[in-house]
Image 1 (cartoon, helix red, strand yellow):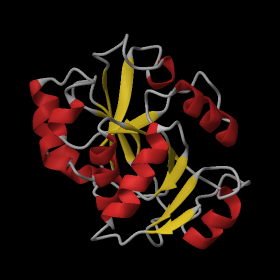
Image 2: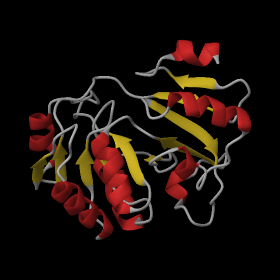
Image 3: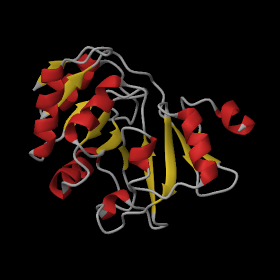
Image 4: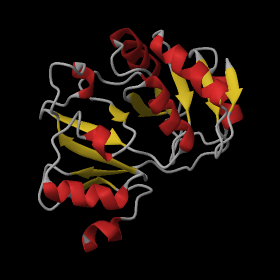
Amino acid sequence: MHLKVHPENPQKRHIERAAGILRDGGVLIYPTDTVYGIGCSVYNTHAIERIYQIKRQDRSKPFSFICSDLSHISEYASVSNSAFRLMKQLIPGPYTFILPASRLKQLPKSLISKRKTVGIRVPKNKISLRLVASLGHPLLSAGIADERGEIINDPEIIRQQYEPIVDLVLDGGNSLLELSTILDLTEEPPVVVRQGAGDVSMLIAA
């Protein structure tokens, strides 16, 4: 299934339909503020297993997930005062934050690293944020690529490659060709694990 969604004013019926598919254990492709992601409900282990198979990802490598805002993040991770101040400046935005996990028993192991940390995003994208809000809990987030491992930003190519193997493709227009910046906030000062679309100069200033 393929649905075109307005990037600034996402159609409510499309968002609710997508959230329903997620609640039923479905897997979908959706836009973020960087690249397109493949996702599912963080609480559906069968759907998470499907994503591991689709991405052919090593199961020792945890997925990140999307929350709706800073208070939502604090439900799943321990946030220090310094991390709170920094994230308050940067979200929503193209950053993935590595934080100590605080709900070890509730979250699947596929979202928690061996260090007992989680990777969390709050993208500046109305489609993904409204999808999380409609779902009522976090959405798994994993970037998609072609067979050569290169980012695909054209939704028509994404549709051709992924529509046969997922339950829904949400088309929000062309994406960036750059991943999010990953920041490890378990360290002091924060460590840039991966430089991506985020502005690191702001972090240095912070």
